[in-house]
Length: 359
Image 1 (cartoon, rainbow, N blue to C red):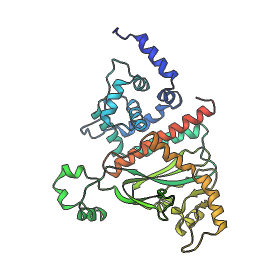
Image 2: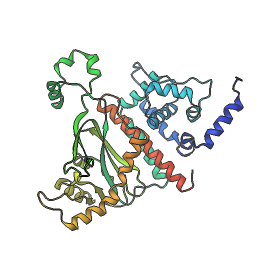
Image 3: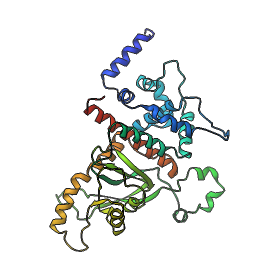
Image 4: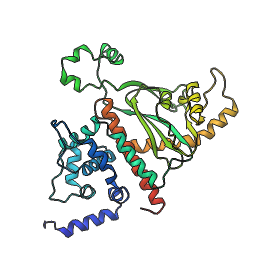
């Protein structure tokens, strides 16, 4: 076997480009330097604590987090694949002889961003990029939420009661190692799904309720371009509707209409939207023990055509990125979901730029 030379590597990279390297398209379309000010601010260790600024460029490290999010990779797998794949190395600007960040360095970098709450600033930096490119929030907004799974916890009923009350179980307090592996913020809830058709062709009248453990991702997208504009992370048991009044509505949208499903229909939300100048297009609920009036059925059906667009956001994150929280605690879950939201917006930006002939 002959030794690979410079031109051999260049030829292989050219073939990857011809096959449609998504990361190369990211490099052409997304200016990752816009994240540098936020990254440098977050990494400005002033206390000299252990695990200070990593010896790698912060933008390079952030691009590694983008690779992780796109491919649902652990830190160890990320380290291996950066060493293994030419497309990853090209995206990061690394040569075959360059040193690659190891799994511990990747963890420390992400952990520092997590602990200082940098993800919101990073998200806003890219949102500013979208606006400057002409993708203003337009035509109203659509709200929805989706469940994001986390590793299941094996706790006793007493421990669960303590966690629900916001207390640390007494047995955990003198066991720091055990405590560090226990997720005290994720919660159990029921996920309802349509019952499948039976062998005799009948469909059960009741839906299936499946126990689910983890977190919930709440988003607001603009109707025109379908970018995520506002977002929030909660435990899985948190109410969808109450989040509407907690910063999920985008006041910069050029239109005032708000679409959402029946979980967001409440007098408190309707009053809130009216006071804030929004026009409610939220689905109406079926009257208790009464059939749904035909005019409300038709109205809800028309709203569903628009509201369903937000489902594509969650489908992209779960099918393409394999969105899953593999860490412990809501702070790290927020970082994970926030990165998924940034990367979704990047993918959407790339799609629209190609559609407009700009990429």
